[in-house]
Image (tube, rainbow, N blue to C red; front, top):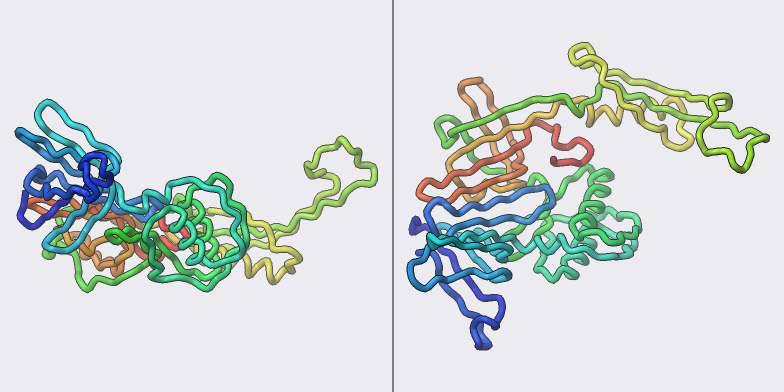
Length: 355
């Protein structure tokens, strides 16, 4: 394995060491070349770290729960816990680890008072027993809610969605070595251009309108109840007493894409003008194609989700500016490469979703 890496194993329990101090092992020399993979995603999942070890006589086995720390060119990259290991007759040991946010998959039941995303992030992190930091928060107050038997990730996601809907600002959870951080999204602009002459080795660009709408119809339903309604009658609307008013807004893209219509309910007591404005507001986020870019390039440790970079593709004369990274897979070895999934344009902002 390249001399640029350093990997350390720390026994999390004194059960194996028979002493009060935790045993620590430098296992860098045992790592199989090109086996180290670091995966980071914005989709409410912990960072994942995979690698292989090889031994000859006395094996050093990373047991479940043990701590693995990894550095590349003296920069701290990963800190996490062994969740799976295995070995075979050829003396190969395979190991899978997760960053500290893995413990946000724990389930709990909490009654939250009205509070901010930052407050709820701190609360669930404390309950999960992990080190946490709010790098970017929000003053928006989320409504009080009861989360019964949900994961901490789901609780944060609920508060994050509500905050994004009301502030139009996006956030992500990021394993920054041994600390779980609440960050804004996008987080940091990288002053580089990844292109044919600057590290780009492969790419896959796609455009789709599967979740696009260019017509929004806002409806207001009025169901008058009959005096003769029996107690056993269902709550289904009666066609004889139900009327529907609506206002529709159509965008010019309907000529190109065809009619792609969405129906939404009018806000309570909305008048005609307010219904039209509601349709226009809905179309601001809906009337756009989804653009996604996947690239493979020479590795850099700052190519991580949340950061954004410009990508240039000479063959198609395309230059995609400030593409936010959604997912990154770092492959360390003699040739250090990154596989990146990115959003292009503003379509990733639709409905507060980064997926």
